[in-house]
Length: 138
Image (cartoon, rainbow, N blue to C red; front, top):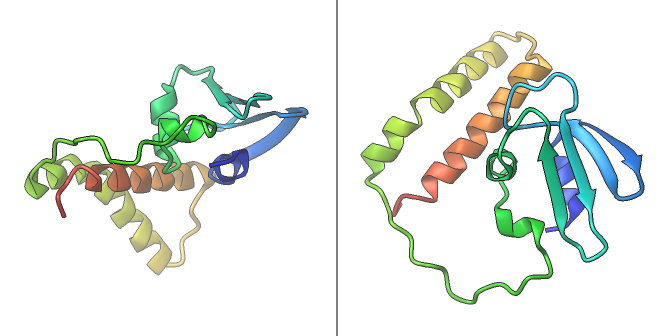
């Protein structure tokens, strides 16, 4: 993956030291950077949200997977078995993300400004939809 892909999915990114950054956490409504990021010498990427968000929620919010934080680890050649859910079950779980995107679409159509906080919610909704679709057999 690389640190660049992760940083590109975050907002208010600021370098604090070589190989270290802070940014707004994409897993919650963050107005001031609470996410600490560090790229280790071995290529691994460490994340810490001081508001308490889990690493899996953080990477999922930017469309990545936990394995993307460990680029030097060997990748499995075959996909692990996954339990798929019926499309109707997945759609029910997407009610809120779809509502968020619907409201954003109406705002855009009416040329309303989308705030940075709302943009973070839109990005989170998109990541939730992408993740949910990976659990369907569609």
